[in-house]
View 1 (cartoon, rainbow, N blue to C red):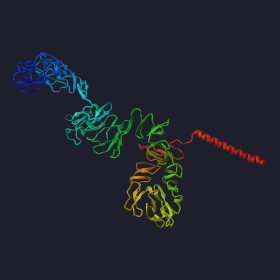
View 2 (cartoon, rainbow, N blue to C red):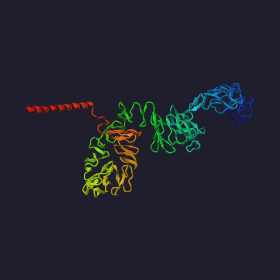
View 3 (cartoon, one colour):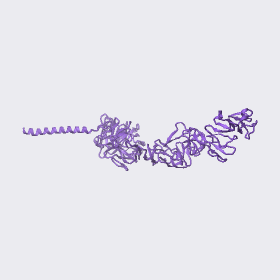
View 4 (spheres, rainbow, N blue to C red):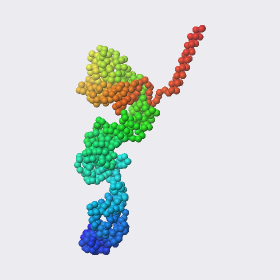
Length: 640
């Protein structure tokens, strides 16, 4: 502290050199009295001690907060938070704050300093020298810092300068992901931007004064949750063991490196992280697997719409790895996603979690009932085996059919019966060898006998008074144009509001003789109103060669639809399976939802063994009675 000329600091207050407090307790450095030219004290007297150019009374007022006792102008007992430099004289500053980082040089040229953020300390065990300052031994730090006794430093805690809500757990510690302005996360700790040499803006330039996060990292540092981490030491090494040019190249155990990550991307991700990571450089997404403890990076790379998941190789304690599904499930739970309670062998589910429906085979818990079943409470009951979809049990309650069958609507038109393609009404009046038009996976008549034309797949007398016949402009056993909500396909007119027509077109162009406007398979109709076909047995597709969903009774693998009973590559079909899905891993047995030859339902309505026994007894009684009666009739009556 330095005052105006003619004044010196006494107890922190600039005092006239002629005042008693100044003349009595403050002298020039050479021990001579003050004069009107002085601005600081050179040494102190009695119980006053020298501190930053001023004399302070020990044990009282401001001085008492620095030193509790002094003799002959030298502090003898420092206050809490201060230490006495060894060898200090009355002409030296004889007390130094434990947190003082500016070096204090004594008259003998020896230097001393404290430890940044230190609040309690002891004097250095050895005297300093003219070249290197001796550092106090810290024993306590500020609340925002923790003491590292081995290195004699106060390390900032993750909460230091961290924005509220941005402190996140990482293993057995915490890291800050966004700091106050002017600070950025370095190894999880908010660090002044000027001390963050390896942290840059996303574009690579120097940080702005209001920076709060890192945009990219340099050298052996890598980006993780808004901060730069050193791969060679500390918490950074627990995430990544090697990095170059700001990108992690070798992840630590439990982490993986997202393919194509650059210095401005987070280049390491936990195997168990389920929140999508979006790379800044290309917007591709990646994620881990819930409860996964060891993994490898996904292959192929992710894309902008769907996050690519790491390939899990081990799960956390208490979880089992299901490799085919690439999931970790509780060891005491089921191997079926969404299952609340499972069978003793853990192969089937007895009850699904809330909001899920148990399939008839009890092999899956789904958000909605699959093909071949209908909702029955919290479970799915099997439709009649002939129905692909239905609203209730019964062969006449089908609302759609499996490929190879056609739906014959009942009188009210809400449901009907599935019969083999090209049979019954669908075969009547169909010209020879003309049931060849593929619609919704089944064949329908493309040319009828004279006087008939295909309307909704059935050869209908044309020119009649019925609405169906009036929708068709006939010509030699076919329709040449359609009206209303009918569209022209394979020589016939088909309604857009019922099967089989609705499986191909859902809206027609007004006044265009039956040209389709909106295709059911996701493709766009061409200029003639014709819907491009998807691959075989495919219900919807993103391109004519890329299938996105198959017809009922088929599963999708590599843009190919295969029957649930048949194998395809590494996927194995299941005998008697009517409705299924491919395993999420792309290999192994299909997940079968509904099977033939069984009345299986997710609600467990099969007859019990007791009921079966009761029925058996009843049958025996009836048969026995019948045999007795016949004996009497033929034997007794014969004697008569």
